[in-house]
Image 1 (cartoon, helix red, strand yellow):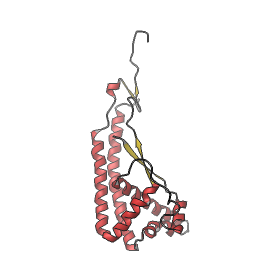
Image 2 (cartoon, one colour; image 1 turned 120 degrees about the vertical axis):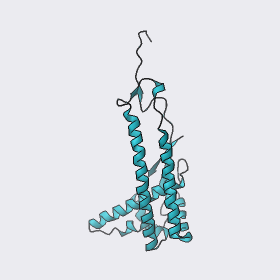
Image 3 (cartoon, one colour; image 1 turned 45 degrees about the vertical axis):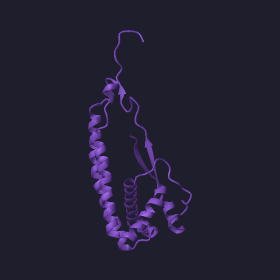
Image 4 (cartoon, helix red, strand yellow; image 1 turned 60 degrees about the horizontal axis):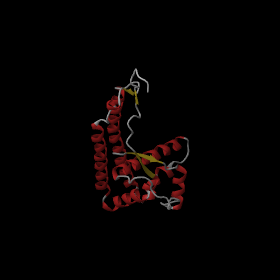
Amino acid sequence: MAIRRLLIGVALASLLCAQQNGPAGNNSGQTQSGPPIGVPALYRAFFRHLAFLDQQADALDAQGKDGSALRNFYQNAIGLTVEEAAVLKQAGGACVTAVQQTDQAAQQLIQAARAKFPDRKVPSAAALPKPPAELGLLNKQRDDVSNLWIANLRASLGPASFQKLDTYVQTRFVRQVSSVAVPNPPAAPPFSQTPASSGGAH
């Protein structure tokens, strides 16, 4: 199964421009490329960028500058109240933290599999390692955790406000996110096969 990697590229300058020109900004003609992005993955990307803007806003505040444009960007773009924006950030931050724990577990599995081949060489093609089965379970767990926090957010915001959020995420924010399908690796990479010794000529 193809592995999807999310590449998120939302420039701060374009965000500020979008805030001045309305939610769509200059992205009205921009469309999503690559395979469709699942709702859990899309919301994870949105939550991470929400936290990123807050970090950038805090950095501006620390420099004696006004970081409110970044801090309140999504609140204004979506049309949320101050209280609703606080609920969104709390749920988003909790989701990101929970998913990070799952990601760390997945990274440990990957490192353990690589540790079996410290020189990144295998004696034969038959000895090439398969992805740990637990990775598939962890990926499902990531989506389950994300869906749980999305449902929590829906209940906390109420139908009308959540609908505004969901519409924005799935019609406008999605334009800034691309999903790239990485095909399954061929027989050898990222490991190389150790040449078999032979006394005869090739």
